[in-house]
Image (cartoon, rainbow, N blue to C red; front, side, top):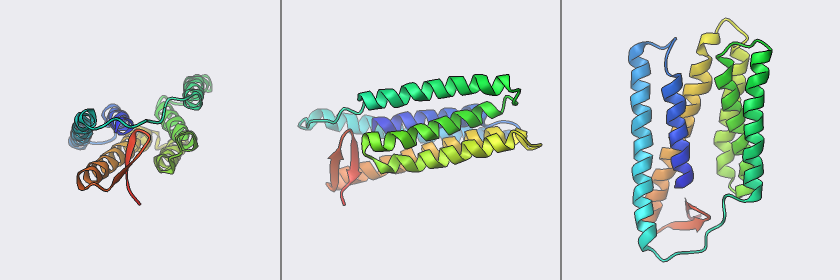
Length: 190
């Protein structure tokens, strides 16, 4: 659930920061409120799971923060900040930055899938990567104003939607007794 909580927080940040022009004020506000409610629901699920895990017998957990994980995160940081500097040096519009962030975050999920032996995180990775590419393409057109929505808001929606969906599945599986433990994540049993 910790990974889902992190995804929900970053998803909410993507929406809150990027929901603005050219969206009307009502739509932007509604998106921000829904993002906060979704992130809060994942936080509630996280607390409920944490409380149950404290009282349950402890099982051996897989270390999610291995050297391979640290290598992926280090590469992500270099790509993220280096890419932002390159975009600025090449004179790309500021809106391209959110597209680059979405692209790098998506690639980071794809790279972590084999490290964590969890193919399911590659799905949002592919979607975020595609939204990042779409935003980079839009940044070179007259539709540049839509880049924050396409690469920012929609990326946030993907992260929040995935976090809420998998959090609810984990909670449902846990309460019905059909869950199996995989590392730190509860997954519905096959």
